[in-house]
Image (cartoon, rainbow, N blue to C red; front, top):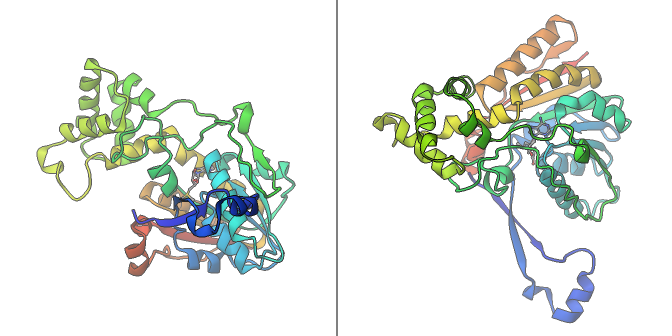
Length: 357
Ligand SMILES: C[S@@+](CC[C@H](N)C(=O)[O-])C[C@H]1O[C@@H](n2cnc3c(N)ncnc32)[C@H](O)[C@@H]1O
């Protein structure tokens, strides 16, 4: 995955003058590098949201805040953004990114951070006083940070504990300079994690593991993989991503071990979908989104696999049948080759747009 490296001076912002006095000019500054998620289909998203200054935007997958940041700049800061993310790290990272990005804007965007599941869209927006929105965006799945740096076991290329939850209720609210409040499920445990990948792999029976891999990973070797997992765990508990990836590799036929795609790819996707109950969350949120939109407002959804895209497509058809408005994308918008060259993660993206009447 290609990533955009952003560097941020440690101690920049508050107190950086006193740092300079004590330590000399900035060239000696210690730089901390971190991965910034590259917003997918950015130009198309900005066009399709079709927002005007002063309007209200709901970003259902804030992540590193890439789409919201560019939108706020385009609106010269004259916009209200309600941004959801289940992951407290994402909220903290978006806050930090916005602080840097908006420091030169004359008008600062009004940003409401919501640390909650977008399946609670109506309730969460009502609680922060957002009764209607002019555009709503979903950019589903996980961020580059979650995949590569969160340490939660999303990637089979790493040796990490088998967690795979978007939500990470650690209560580590960031100390940003922006005054925006973070609201959401937070400490009361609502939407906190019910089980992890380690639980599924070690405690579920073979049939259920197979069903998950089959239905959410669409892997034709699901039964072999489930069998391999159950056999391996008789010897010892499977607790790491690298161990699981190796078991999967050994379980599939030899011709499937060395192909272009790692044999664990689909199982890892399946586990993530199951643990975060991703398809049910999408099914629950889309009807709420259409209700929340003002007349003429746009609903924009970027999905990354066929199971999600099918749900979006079917909902949009139903919305049209119910005379809620019209589908603006007869075929989904997909990235150009130039975009996927720079950002291979965008390869599987499909964007669909609906306009409320
Ligand atoms: C693809 S990333 C979004 C990237 C973002 N658009 C950007 O440009 O930086 C998806 C984000 O959605 C969050 N997420 C996934 N499912 C969610 C849900 N049901 N409710 C709230 N946040 C969710 C993930 O934690 C992740 O941070």
